[in-house]
Image 1: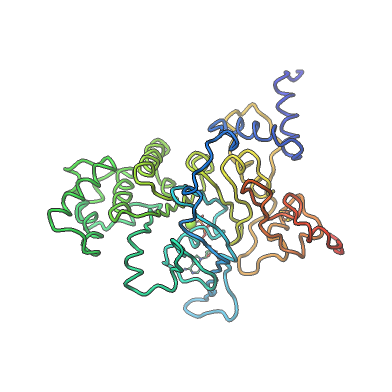
Image 2 (image 1 turned 30 degrees about the vertical axis):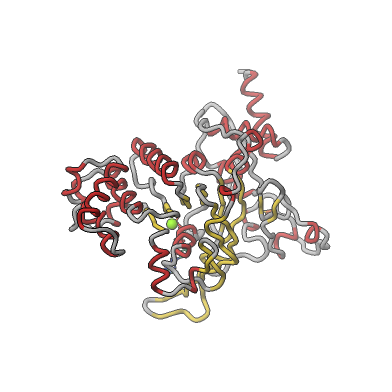
Amino acid sequence: MEPGLNQVGAENACRRVCLGSDVGYRSRLFAALRGGFFVTPIASQTAPSADATEALVRIERLVKYFPVKEGFLRKADLYIHAVDGVDLEIRRSETLGLVGESGCGKSTLGRLVLRLEKPTSGRILFEGRDINTLGSTEMKRLRRRMQIIFQDPYSSLNPRRTVYSTLAEPLIIHGIGSRSERRARVLALAEEVGLRPEHLDRYPHEFSGGQRQRIGIARALALNPGLIIADEPVSALDVSIRSQVINLLEDLQERHGLTYLFISHDLSVVEHISDRVAVMYLGKIVELGDRYQIFAEPLHPYTEALLSAVPAPDPELTLDRVILEGDVPSPIDPPSGCRFHPRCRLRIPTCFEIEPPLNDVGNGHSAACHVRAPVEEIQALPETLHI
Ligand SMILES: Nc1ncnc2c1ncn2[C@@H]1O[C@H](COP(=O)(O)OP(=O)(O)OP(=O)(O)O)[C@@H](O)[C@H]1O
Ligand code: SF4
Ligand SMILES: [Mg+2]
């Protein structure tokens, strides 16, 4: 049977998208393929205020290596390169999405920002202050400003504590309010996240997954934080209640001017909630941009492959998918040059030897790729390698 006009058009469009020759087409097609949220181009959005672009957190050359252990023994000189030279800003009141395959270092990066892990090297500045140089009193004060929401609300809640006790605990630890003021605060927190007063005397096992995540969110809000690290906050929930929790997070952000680092495998959720998105691969940020740039005009071949793996809503639509070749290499001995080169369909000889820097190609869109975001000096090097 002869293909219909629409089908031919779609196939041609896919080819043009995957060959990367038509950025405008690429934008529209990726949006159509995901069938979901078509993001307004940044040019037509209201320009952010100076405050909105101010960095709440600045991460500089951050490195975290974990020693490799065999049983209880440490294996000499072998390290997992979990985070390997990350420079990143989290701007005040924004949602920065963080995506990447399992094991690429997303949670470690989040834990480093909260100082739950000590960096091997590099700095994290919160409101301009290096968090790893703070004494215990200053750190306790800072802890009130940074909170985490975990993937699994059940294991992060104490099964022997009532909701009231869970929500009052951070207030007691930080010596906030009298008994009656704390009671009023706990009631207000419960109301904010959609729990009823009678829920406060119950235990975690008496709630559904969505309700338990609401308790986790209320606990994170208790101390009026500025920054919330949400590490896969909806991945463990039923699809039907994910959107309710996402809407709640968005409402709370608007009400309290919260800043989110939103870590997730679910690209459609990240696209929906994020202002900007960072794509991580084997301990490094390989692409950074606003959500339109990342989802509609991706530059890095890895980002393209991640987007291409999102199931198309229309099974009739054929697409030249960008398939990721091979497995993620070991973080103990990452590949030379560009870490993505063993799996990259666009690699050139330079990629085997020289690590591409995260290069800003304009409007805050950066990528680490010799082909898609070349840096002049590196491009000028003679290509001496043979594939
Ligand atoms: N405490 C630790 N000790 C040793 N290795 C660790 C530790 N924490 C993380 N790692 C390793 O560091 C790497 C990055 O782990 P991390 O949990 O940050 O990845 P992730 O991107 O969050 O993955 P996922 O999407 O599966 O949650 C992995 O190889 C992991 O095994
Ligand atoms: S630098 Fe080379 S190997 Fe790395 S993503 Fe770009 S083209 Fe591929
Ligand atoms: Mg993780």
